[in-house]
Picture 1 (cartoon, rainbow, N blue to C red):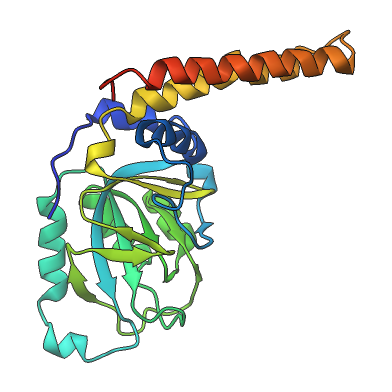
Picture 2 (tube, rainbow, N blue to C red):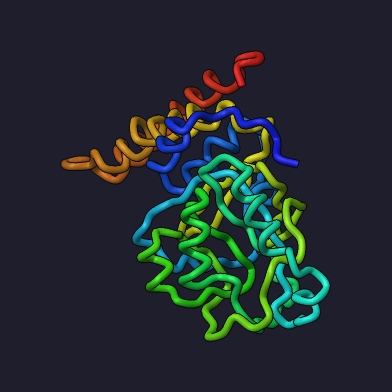
Length: 252
């Protein structure tokens, strides 16, 4: 199910330099969307490793149901099959896990062991609408986690279905979608939106810094009327720059 990838590792590393709202600003210009509901999480997330900064990678997907012990009997090879799937997909990868027990939290797929296993298989982090545990050990393994909450046990957790569409925090994610995530939440970038996302995000960040933000900070010795006039001019220039960049036929 994984779609062809259009970004190099260098591009992905550069995307990691910005926070997720900045990437959204670039996505907004590429897609001409006037709202974010088509791309970002609709429910609140929690970043358990904000000190690790943003994570960027391609989605690999998994469903779990920790409350249901029968999966261990009916799908005895599921975990091994799931790990082979992980190994078959090039990284960097973000594991997007739909917990079928939601809104209950019975147990966690994630802990010290799975963090180290997934790191070894090229994963940089996870987004799960369930729970994680062993948060310090997961951090030490270098696997970033965005989740609903912490919990103590793992219960009867194992792979139920993988390499399929999932829904987490109100957002559908498909295998191969590009994800950028941090303490603000996450954005899902579809394959046809990926080619220009780096340049668009970089441009919008520079555009803000050179216009509106610069006008708001260069205020020494100015009256409020002068500040307001400068900010109005800067806002107009910001909009003009964006229009000139993103309304050229076929550029994106």
